[in-house]
Image 1 (cartoon, helix red, strand yellow):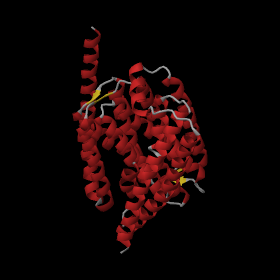
Image 2 (cartoon, rainbow, N blue to C red):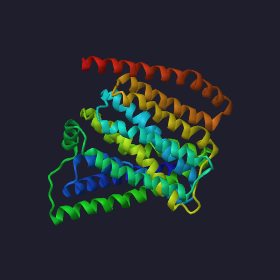
Image 3 (cartoon, rainbow, N blue to C red):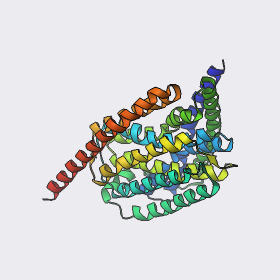
Image 4 (cartoon, rainbow, N blue to C red):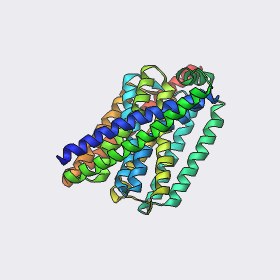
Length: 365
């Protein structure tokens, strides 16, 4: 009976989070458009950040209630899910050509934020001071993004304008409607996050699974649904920069804002488990670093790359399940990842970069 109640809370929480995130994104983007904000800026900030609203709601609720493993697991798991699962599925649907200079500038910042997260975690907690540093980074990033977006190519601006530009009605009724959507979205996010955290924690304790693993899997995938919808739909429409930019922007937001705000409001900081420091956060950093050569070379994220990312996500989930059940098998699985999967990944990335450089040179001759 307890299991059924927990599952019901999780499902209901995910539904409310999805609806709340959608209302928030629609209301905020329409309001920004009515205020004459550039569609490119709306896409890179309002929408990318809005799709991370479920992570923010769940992580802050978990941190404030003392469920720190769920809070950390949600941030780390969502970032891994964004790259391996969402970007992988998007590339499987339609190969993604990373043409935007802005996205390639954001990738090093995403990696820097992930390294900062790892550095802050080494003492075993994210303190209030760490949270202030992270949130300060978000403010600087947002200002920088708005300034740099003015120099973006006409092609990218047109792509974002086509997706996010709407009739600019500035009437009182339109503004009030958007504000109601935002408020309603926040209420749904708050309620949904509370139900999801309670259901996930109860389920973890019932089955003897660590709350960190629950945060890395069920909670992380569930709160990443808005990013999945936005990126996959963009890939189907051929909007390559939106599909990739949404993932990069959301990952930055997860670290700088979601973790930053949660660390600031948590009564005693956010405790970080040894498993997260030793395994999960380094895996998140490695996943982001793997994007660097592909994005920087302006290469196509091909269907093969998408299949590779998706396969790695399945392998990571398998590893998490094994880690919760059988320590001896987990050790063997770790060796397979280190001595087979990692070298194979490095070779695949290098081949893709070399191929991209050759194509670039041929195009300039």
